[in-house]
Length: 471
Image 1 (cartoon, rainbow, N blue to C red):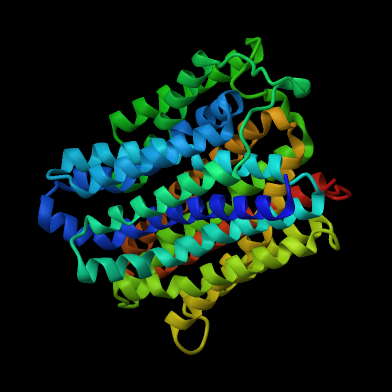
Image 2: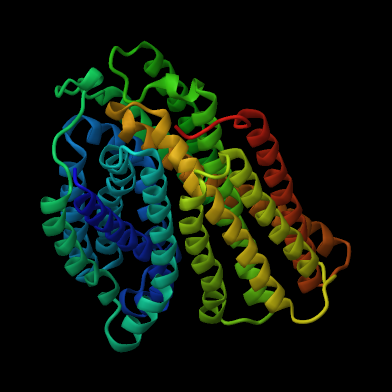
């Protein structure tokens, strides 16, 4: 595959990531308009917002393995086409149930994008240095899409009906499909270069979907609505089916994913760090956003804009790291990124507890910029390790396992840090502290918990990746 074509192909893959990232971030701005138009209940509104992520997380592993069998380009382009159809259905929804169903379809289609794009990069870029740069661009474009989401959404909602935030996906999807047919490599790779794929593990797929959907649903519902019998039952289902899934992988002749991948120290460490960065990044959002809006009096739109510099810096750092991987070791780059993120957490804790001079809002923005900037240094390196660790015929499954780590890390981060925040707040209020003071104490405690997690990741990286070189 020639130099110009593979970089044009990367542009197509990156456009798909931008579309996905925008769709993740843009909906929050449209919540008031959707509530006014469709009048959903509070539970229905939560499903409208969350079902997209639930379905993506549940189907990632299945879609990654399916792409290895049927062809990554084919699965990606079919997924993008269905994403466009689901977007039209979402835009034309006349009731909450229709919008929930359309968002679920968007999630199913979106689950094809992340593992397929990363595994195609593994196929297209055979030179190690060039692949490192390509993965860095891939990471950066997602950050750009996340940053652009609020801006695009704000413009569309100001001038059009809320359905426009979904319809914007349609022309983008058309460009991806047409350009993808021209630039993306076709075919599939079996073991030892055999073009015949191994049989698809339908049993493993069903078990993984049930376990992941149940687990993500239980964690997020517990955080948003509290723990009840239904949440406990769902968590039990997730654990039982998860155990059955792991046992099945060890016995199946052609398992959905190769369990041996997680026994490779570099791959396991990279997936764990990916989950850990999302633990920090997503988990802190449930702490930072309420602090800005509830305690510091910042409007939701202004709070969203405060996050933009961090997302932009994250993308710029990711691009720089792509060129630095041939000069610095993976362990050094990841450790440096985690240290910067940890510094951001220290700033946040100081701000939350009122220990820093000047504007608390400005300090929160600085803290988030450091947390996001550090993440931008970590993600390209860990994802290069992920694609390097797996043979070509398992690239989709390897990428999907990593993406599942992202989803679970974000869900667990939200649960753990949200629980720490709420628990400390309740204790402080019962001791006579005011609401704002108690919330600040809870936010500071959550920041300390996140700081401990960052420290544990640094220890893991130093133990498992010291001496490792990207081949």
